[in-house]
Image (cartoon, rainbow, N blue to C red):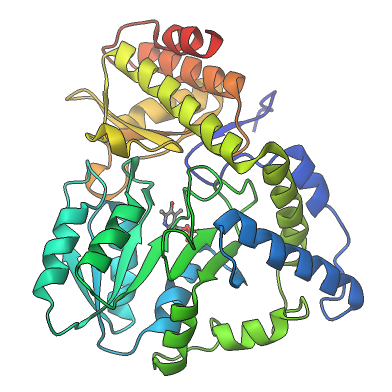
Length: 387
Ligand SMILES: *Cc1c(COP(=O)(O)O)cnc(C)c1O
């Protein structure tokens, strides 16, 4: 293969670019995970990560993908045959539903159109009808990475409360944590599910469950089998900074650095930075004369933008041109929108010039692939960022 100069533009909505500071933190000798040095690292990350989830209680850290953390949240809190309420916001919600089915749960899937996030009114309707309280958990995806729509998590909490419904509230923040405002405790979430490779700026390989007291109680009485994912064994070992089995030691070095970086910048500044880059991206899309997939402005995602191709043009052909010519990876269309959309990830370790480089690459690609558009979208974003 010929050498490609310069750093690859990894502008998919996760995994994201890992900053040098984190790469250097990870580049350390592996230590004894039962030894005293490890306990110090373990305690630091197990405490520090709570600030990122805004969770005063425990946050479990697994050596896993986000999918593993999904399974962990379900298997620790529910029993075979339990009904769970899910919402078809897009591809990731659909995958989570498939996992619930395979685990022997009975998901009820509220139909969605993939252009909006989960709608609180529809959840309210379903909960009001569930007089016998057969639904044991409401499972929502905060930021649907396939569509670029962000759900109103506190409003959904409110409809659960207004219905006087005792269901647990489980929320996937895999592509919103450390990019979009999220508050586990304040928003009354019972299990928050996270992953390392998106807003946290780490390589893939860590999964998270942030817990409420109610979730811990549910785990005492629920009966789905749990071994690798068991919270109790984790919590027993975590008290001293240790893990019941070999943790991903070097990723934890990276996590420690990522937490420091996020707190140095300030989470509110991190969120504002993502909001601003998302807005600049939409200005560019608008100028090109293309359409953002998300149809509800108050649900626009700040971590990624999914863009619809004009009729008769294939999104993956465009992505291929951009990869070949400019060494940039953009997100593919997933599930129902395969071929119809491409996605720009603007999350993680990302600044104004990263965005302008990204948008310039897309704009040049649109030209080369003969996709009808109006030139100057990148300029529109520059005008906004430079103002
Ligand atoms: C990436 C992602 C997942 C899946 O995480 P993996 O680490 O690929 O298992 C789940 N949900 C959302 C919202 C995601 O963005």
